[in-house]
Length: 105
Image 1: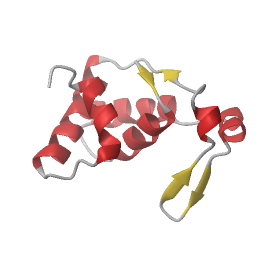
Image 2: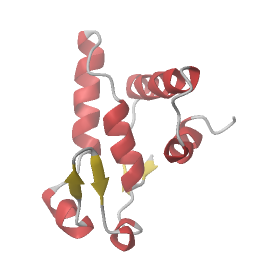
Image 3: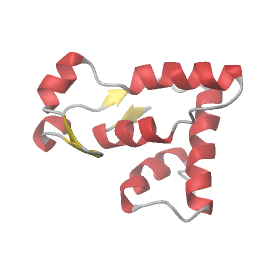
Image 4: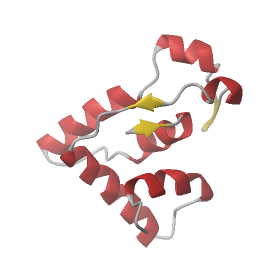
């Protein structure tokens, strides 16, 4: 699945920190895949101040990344997004990401 810089950051924050051994391992691997390389940090000029992450939006337009998401990882993501929605904690930032994982809604 092709993900933007914002999608990747949001997903990194959504993945569960706890679960059964399989879920924890899959989440760890997915975090590695979603993370940014040294080159991406440089190219995107990624900066974090407190809890806010900023980047060069012009560079981000060319920085979409294709991430392989298996069925268990997909369940982890959709469960996290569903929980956010049920708790009414989705924000406008989540819309694009939500639409990628729930295209029919």
